[in-house]
Image 1 (cartoon, rainbow, N blue to C red):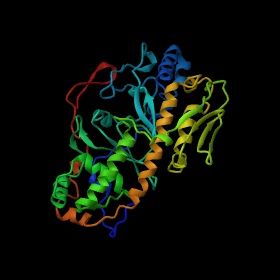
Image 2: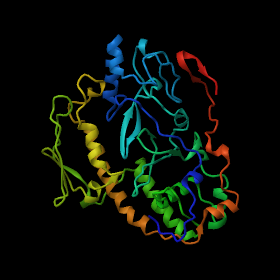
Image 3: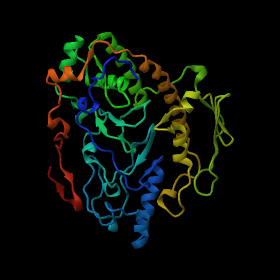
Length: 390
């Protein structure tokens, strides 16, 4: 973590005041690593009737087949009770299901115990969500996708769609502009936060333009790697991972669980007889909250599901897109690991302390900044086809 000689760094919770508790899906089957499985699961649910449909659905205190809820903002789904639902389901959307694991979700409010509609309202191509991880090495994740992972608080960068109204303490950008001699953008501040944030979720700030620029540069690269949008990341030629021997073709029901093994000396990842190399040790060792990212990624695709459940409906052969995603994930983890020493070596000079921000009137942030903005500029369908009034 960045070196700082004071203990008065402001809290992330004050710098980005609006935060939302994580989503609680309530059941695993509406999320999957591939969209085709989700469409098949929905069809299987609607094919079943009565008690069979209820057993497949896996009701909870928050959701049953008779629950009446509105549409998720921005999604076109049915709002009738699932007990009598018919027809095709919602088109799956990409989400961040686990750290660095992009999967797919059926965006149907009737399937999700606590969906946090306020996050769906501000999710668009401009948005960046940060999610707390309880990991000392990577206290925050950043993603363009809606995060559905089990985590701490989620903080959007923007309070409204279209990249408007940054979720920053009012007056913060003006104060930093006075101290730095130039006005940073909201993405600049987020980049700095990703570089400087500590495990206790305090964020030392600096008024030194040179230090600020170095931290922002590291944070921009971190943000680009975590979001994985735009140009795809690549390792230098001789270090790029390739499939050296075909990965297993059979997965899912009836197939043995592939054995995963890493050869540190040869920098080779083995999946049964399949081989990928070179895989840098720092990519294999990358953990979030004590869980190795690559092992968790494989487990989400190969761990057996209980027979007869919707979660058991999954690919029976290894899909080609998974291979491409795996190679990119190895690359991202290796490149992120290279940034950790740069973050650790960042020396904070000319600190901008919490006391400074209090004297400037930036802190504490006003109460309305901790609540979601009113962003509804269109009608949202409520339960049973009624329209929500917000």
